[in-house]
Length: 362
Image (cartoon, rainbow, N blue to C red; front, top):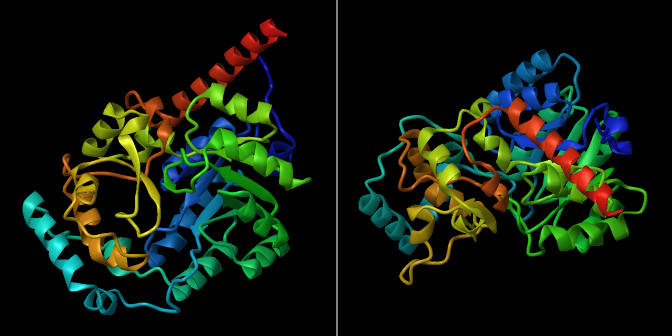
């Protein structure tokens, strides 16, 4: 068996150079058991739920390493109240969304969620930061924004810091703040992403990274792609979308069916989800925002206040026509519901097969 092991693997105490981002504790636990490095996303969790999530993952991982991912976008208010923000929304946008609710028969959500109760603000980020710093996580990742104070405090606690970057400029800014690991996230990625494709971005980030390790991210869902990332000089690959096809993700039936049926071209960049460019798997709701009569989405955090109840409702009520989620072009790798263990074994097997092919060419 070929052993794939980078210096970063050694530093973090993991067997394989496979990094898995997920909002599911169950997925993260299975990634760790398989020998990868799980990163739990907490950017959309209810603040009061975060301590229990962290207690649960600490107990179940029992000392195995893991990371936490936060969003820290700039240009957000110091503090925010969702009701006040909703009252300030432009009337034309409110009327447009009301029309879509009627057109698609969107029922009100019956349970509160992050999207219906929270406003992305400095106060919220400060609360999340304190919770994360107090955790047992060995790594801290930030996306959409940087905080030099957060980075320095995390490093002082012995945590490895990661920054998701979409350009050379972003990488240089992160390095100047002392970030340990750069995650070169290409245009192919699900969620908030930049304009440069992964295969073009990764070598550019490696060129400016110096001694800092680089991970490749964006559209990666196969072992061949992981090996290609290593061949480019990255010390690992960061995967997110793939795990939504695992039973441990508890993906709703409507969304799982959409993921399985979709190909790379069925994902699209939209501002309609959050107010920032975000790659999602398309649905009738996303398409409605591209019609000629639709207004331009509002900036973050106003767009969330405008449509947060709809996003919550279509997931709660499992509306197959409307349901969507952040998803990258690696969606092609989700062909059926499976398990994290099976996905991980497939990735390793594909890496070994790809390495054998390369050796035959040398």
